[in-house]
Length: 191
Figure: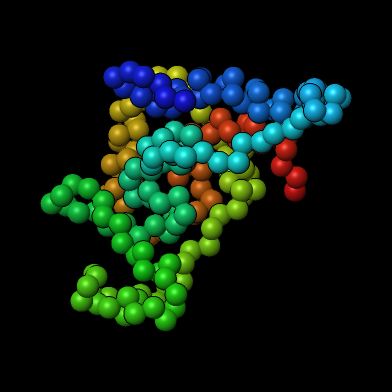
């Protein structure tokens, strides 16, 4: 779905997606459909397997904050980021840890940041862990008020000014909202 306009809907994309979520819930349970070839009814079931989108759209759909210190959804709180004071933005390093342990780039100091990489790739957070993390999260859909925007900017500045200590990767603060797709999962995840 492409929403035309000068500005994208941002977090308000969930308002557009509400009808999709309702239909997905119906299709998960199943709907009676007529098979013309067999001339009989059957229970049609369907599920959304994936979406294809750019990084800003990923943030709006998933709820993961793709801005700031912890941009990488795979690394989560173990994202290797460094604030560039002259450039006034984050730089993301540490991608060599995803390579095989004996890959030559892991030991190449000159082409990278002057260090060798000995760390292994971070553990990926499971879907049930994410669901449990966001279960208690409070989020109000709709446009933010000016005071809310100012609090968000102040909070982001505090995060940028923190030392390099790692946050808890299961901390709901790393998320900007609860995805509307999580409401689709509420009745379907089994533990």
